[in-house]
Length: 632
Image (cartoon, rainbow, N blue to C red; front, side, top):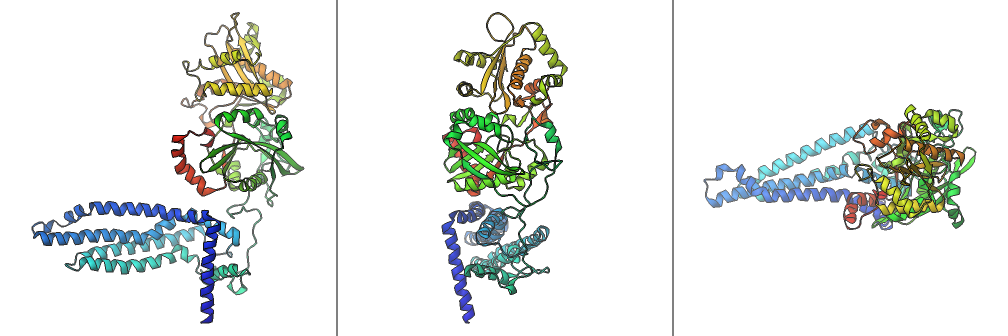
């Protein structure tokens, strides 16, 4: 008796400790309530629909009572209707737990993982394999559904008994329903606590685990079903899958610079070697001095830096209501460490903050960088998600590696996710020889006929002329996805002021009006063909090709590594005439092949709030106040 009282007190203390866990982390309680609220609302709606229509159904089921006295026919149809309504309620009660458990599977697993992470995981073997658990769950579902339907049928028949049918139906429903409901918690989930043929710990063992946690001591040897398994250091915090290792060259050395301009290096990469999880990268905010020198610092990044990581891009994005956050990441590498300068764009919504790292961060060891970002962002207040997009060529294997690190695949954010990237390191002669014959002929022809290329000053007059040429596409509407005029003025002005952007105008007559124009950015070691336009009434063909070739020659002279033509369809849609970039791609493909880079990935830090925002709040909030596309 004393032992039972002791266990009763311990159980009560464990219950109170559970409420304490909820008090310390109310998100757990809210997360656990979501499935019940969803299923409860659906079942309430079902009961309301039945209640509103039950009179008509009862009349349709009793045509033989139409000739009876109104009192008796009314009593019979009332009993039938009550039987239908009570049967529906009983069916909902019987299946509520099973449906809630099925709907709440991902919610409860997340709660379990968070509690186990805080208190220590349950002993090995507590879970069955997937297929065994699936079979057990299906068996329990069939049994429970059979009991529910049988009970509903019995209640319906009992309701037909004259005079006492209504009361009898309620009693039978309560009795049989209570029996089935008592069985449900011991179904598929309850079975996890019972021993199986392989010696998994039973309910007593799991209870001992809980009591041991409560008492602050280890699990007694008698309660263990076997030797304790050591945690695989290559597995992530949830223990779901081995951590992916970053790509390496065939000689085992780090892949080094891993952007599209290094196509030969990309071809040498092989599957990542297996090994222990590296230490997480160290992440901190940049100092004022580092921010002042930002454009010079990003050139030392493993990918050489890019337009969307520059200070001018950060300033431009304030136009969209996004504030820059400058981070410095020191990540482990085979040869000491590598430093990555990361620009984050912060958007604020009603439920918290979103961070987006355009085309970054890129590192030799992405596993360490992801862990460092996760720890840094989790310590920040109200950051829901960090959206990342390492500037690496896309492949199914690389996507799987990042997903294994706990990232969730998102949509393409940048037009440069699919693009043509030219290797400038090969020099002018080899680069020009790599172009299609048509492009080479156009460049030579434009030069021979006197097409003139100039680099105008970034004045308002230059902005006006450039924007006018951009609008000549699509009958004066401009190309697909064009922004408002004020955005282009802000963009061109910011890059020109920072010294990382310039215009090239081409002239084919003596009127002084440019026939074509382009704007390129030079931040980082990749030059980007950002904007372009031309007048259709040209006197000399090949002007656009000559403008780009002139910009490439200047980039080579400045020691740049790559030239990004900025935006094409994906490789597998290059011939799709419905794609908005199809027309532009036909021109760009004459310079080189399409490179597909990785899409965006979400590092979700607060799953419940993120899901509620994405699934419900965003649509309402953005009807009131439009949010930036970066957060969609």
